[in-house]
Image (cartoon, rainbow, N blue to C red; front, side):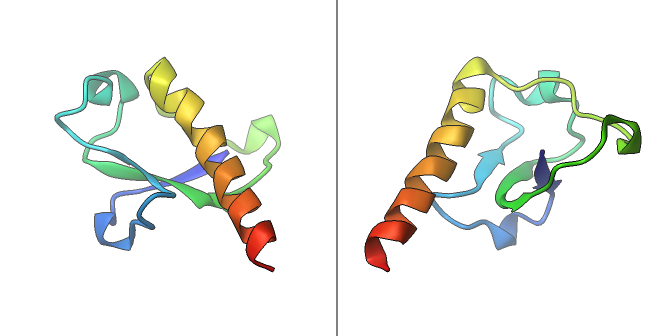
Length: 80
């Protein structure tokens, strides 16, 4: 799972995914305020430990997330 934060000033440009109130999937997301999907804050949690969940994001946004993570990791490996 990815962390979600309303601290937009902490955005890692080109890495985090910003969900703005003007985005077509904002209302369906169940988010209360514009938020960041933080690709740098990943965790694997047992299903019983979830306190809540957002509703849904667009298929396009969902496809971008793993692609952005893979691109970032590949870029990091190439620079080492």
